[in-house]
Image (cartoon, rainbow, N blue to C red):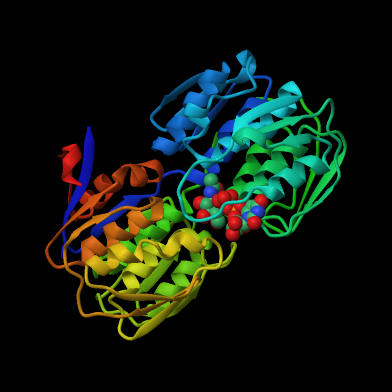
Length: 424
Ligand code: UD1
């Protein structure tokens, strides 16, 4: 059954909502759980399609998997395969996190290369370099990441850029290697720290996560653990922007304010009131916004995953905003969809968009062209005059747990509608 979202714009969001567990943290932690010699219980896992795909892969590999109420019990002792099929692995980019894990367990792995959102070139050269540095033979012919190593030895890995994927894969390789590994120029995102905490709870020695250098003393076996996944930084940010966009008054519970500083600072600059307590964020807005300039950067800079949602908000800010996307160049494709709603947006160079604020957006038929673009279209629709139909909601469901339900609970007029194939 195909569905679309129908949103009647103009409702002010009010009330309290709770952040779900981190998608990108869970996608790294679930494969890591296979490295244990006993079962783990992992809580606060978001119930999203990307997680369901990873769970299917763990089952296919032979692991025991029970998932309900956002809690996973995973038993890795029965794993007996090292080569997940394309039908599963090709469905999401993070599948390649299984490669270093299966390499550690079996001395070899064959994982079809990443799928995921089409947001521009997504090279994996730094992942390959990290694994090679620790002694793996690596081959990518035929669209399959094939790795093998009779044994892995710790070493210094120097990443050319702080890539999240390469940092995760280097960490997951290093915990199975003998001796010490230092990952230099490592990514510092909250999900990297969460993966490090998870590995430490399994008995691994991982220091320095959240700084430029992560130091790992390798050696298995690791043991099963009880762990709670960190809240989702991007979902939290999306809800903050949605609250601001509707001139709303929303408290997001279960969030980590320090993870949100780059966005909070931007919203404050735009005239939105953002206050925080230990684990909640309060966003209040009068619906009038100042234009600002934004440049996406690796954490703790402004996250590329929130660029599209914030750009949607900037379309109605007073004045001209400049958005510089330095991480994924194709993340401006969704501007075509915003234009259909009346936005005045232009890409002046491949990486820079100029947004001239307009008085109002208007409801239209639009598409979610990728996960975060989908969230951006929802935000645009919440602000717009009239009704917006958003196609491609599969993208949104990949990464946001109960997104429409959460927004509805805050007062949004949003519904899921069944569509026939020829409707879009
Ligand atoms: C992860 C996130 C994604 C987020 C992105 C940036 C997951 C599952 N996905 O994606 O939501 O948008 O971080 O925060 O966690 N690069 C190379 N060579 C490499 C690796 C990366 O040139 O080997 C470049 C990329 O083209 C990009 C930049 O480095 O410009 C950052 O990419 P990276 O941090 O690796 O993103 P992902 O791990 O794919």
